[in-house]
Length: 277
Image 1: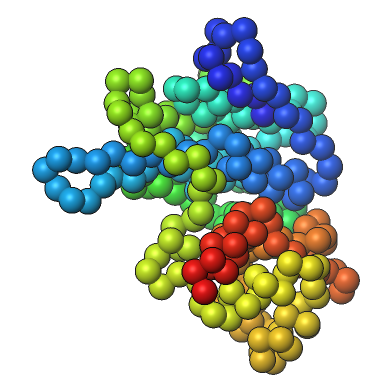
Image 2 (image 1 turned 180 degrees about the horizontal axis):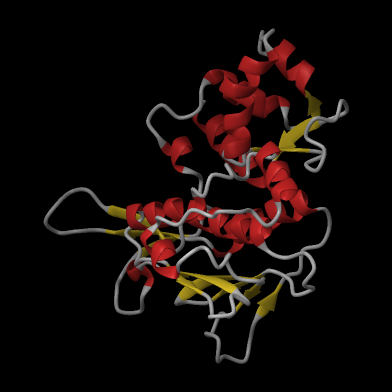
């Protein structure tokens, strides 16, 4: 991951390399990017009371772009996945490009469906970590999320040889130098956390328990749950999806010694809840 504070042609850049098991580096890269480079903008309008809120780059679109790169890259090619950020765009580059059965025009329209998957086992692994659905839904979601955020359309690029695949996420126009926006540097909290209903009391209790590493059976007992499947679907998985908690063994999701703990984002959200109680 490389950040160019003065633009790509500038003299300064910040670089961060992620190493380790596949699931861990994917989550670590997304968490690091969220903490350091995502910003919320607020534009106030004189003709209406509601302010417009938006992100320089929406987290959900970045997640889909990064997971797509992890899923579809060739692990026979030594070139790493690259994430480049500057004041104009966020770029995700991976090797090689999409399968030749996929037309670039269909990708740009969100209608592409792959006839084959390059890494089925990795896809199944990412499904277990709830990082992908594996149903060619990634690109349509990127298009939808960028539109919902008010961002320009993303751009998908490759060459005739399909040697690379590049996803460009343009910055929201509210962060251009010509637009006055109040910037909030708080990491993005996914939309579900910010709704009026917010987290349930049960989920807040679970966050409090996860201040320390805690196994799933202790979490169930503390919240009065007995059905593990329903507990995962209704309470645990939503908090994992929101990146408020994480597994201590992300590469072995079914491990009998698996435990759960707060993420940095979860600590921020819990601190906010505690402040308002």
